[in-house]
Image 1 (cartoon, rainbow, N blue to C red):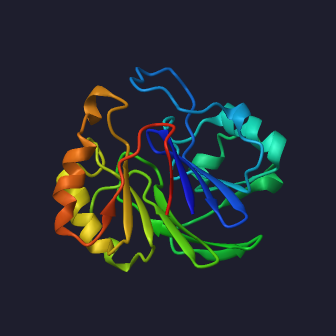
Image 2 (image 1 turned 135 degrees about the vertical axis):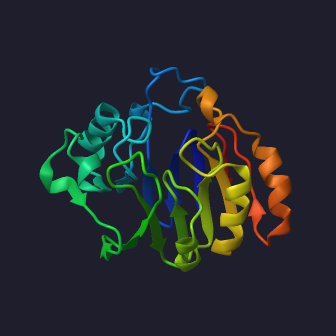
Length: 220
C-alpha cells in the first residue's frame, strides 16, 4: 500500500492495482494556512473518490468533477455530500452507515463517525486483496470504533469538532491498528496540533505512527 498525504484530510492511496482519493480539497480559500500538496490535474488514474461528509474542506466539487471527467472514477459518499458534486449520476454511489459492498475488485464498508456539525458523517474501510485502510473522516473518539477492523488508519488530531491528540491516542488503542497516520491539523488556527506529540503519546499502543508532511509518500 502506498499513501500520499495531500494535506488536511486528503490522501491518495494505491492498493494493489487500484487508486483511491479520500476527502480531496484543493482550495486555497477560507483562511487555509497550509496549501494542498496536489492539484486536480495531477491525477490521471483514480478508481474511486471517497467523501466522508459535505463540509467544504472535505469535498472539492470542481476539483472532483475535473478528476472524474478524466478518469471516470466513482464518487462514493453520503447523499448530503454527493448532491453538491457536479458529475454524472451514474458515477455517484450514495451510501449509508452499515453498508458493505464490492465494486470493481475492492470492498467498501461504510462506518459511523461522530461529527455533530455534519448532516451525515461517515468513515470508510476499504479492502483490496490483503490490504485494508480506514479513513475516519471528521469524528470524535467513541466506543463504536472498537468494531472497526483495518491495518492502517487515518485519524484526525486537530480538535475542534474532531478528536484532539489525546482522544486520537485512545482511538488508536480502540482500533488496534498496525499503522496510523494523523490528519486534519494545522490547516486552520482552530486545529493547530503537534503530530509529533501525538506520535510520542501513541507509543503506549502497539501501533506504528507515521507523521507525513503534505506531499510525502509512504509504503506500508
